[in-house]
Length: 405
View 1 (cartoon, rainbow, N blue to C red):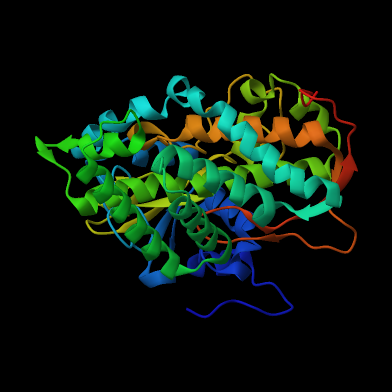
View 2: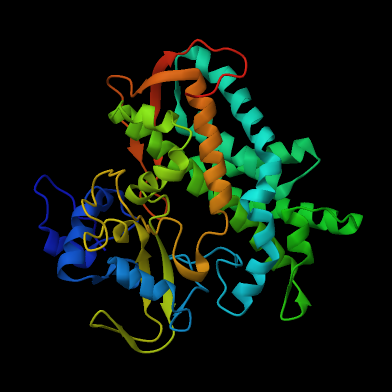
């Protein structure tokens, strides 16, 4: 399709039938288009990428995400997946078996054993960055912090050179969009899996859980093991670094928010509202398995639908004042981590990193702001993330063991 450009904006009702979720120009008007769709045509059809539907209302998103029989996850990427990535790209009953194999290793209780190493890594990064008085938050802190933690927890590799290579490849994928890095990381994961399997060691960690996992009574193939490793690694990176950047930008825009994030209870009370307003993963895809209807919209077998979590989280029928941060909500059943059986398996790890990251960051700095004359750049597509977020700040006087408050 032709990208709509020009000085005079195309009316939203004319843009909507051609709306491309991956187009940076269209992305500048995404909330206008999604608001229009929720009010006028909640399962909007676009001719982008050979045509797909965008599910925009909260209840419709819930319907799709909780009906795996009608809406398959096998092609969970709107433009396809480079390799199968279980459990993301699995439907029941296989999906349930994958989750059972991994759930224990991604609980807050199990992950607590990594808290000190996560904290120490944040400190090492900030030791270099803070004395400068300013740095680019995404590529210099959010991405290395998140990828480093994922490498230690998911890969758990004793080979430091290979571990650093994994961290660099993850940064290449997330920050620079280098597609070749994805396949290089897959090769590295396969090498690590084969080495672990050949050693015969039984370790109590994620990688060993993937090796031991069975589906329908059989061991996983190597492709399935690599895919499971990759989705935990790359999916965890995108979600967490996007949330870190979004919250920092909100603090820069509204300095009063710094005090809220310094409150040790903020992760229980306020984090969900940040995630609702700026869902790190904007949408994922489903394939219709049989002729059906969604909110009056007929769907045919084989139709592709983009399930728009971010739009659902701004549905006024579910959330009052949906376009602003409202920390006084009594309920906040946001869809930022998904809904139903495919709810993000790594959400506890993401929340733990966000909590520790801000504790360490705010123990060292205050008065976060975007430098005058700088422009923040934001990505379009599946991940809602700032790509370029320069910040400057005041350095706090720090005493050993000081907390963020």
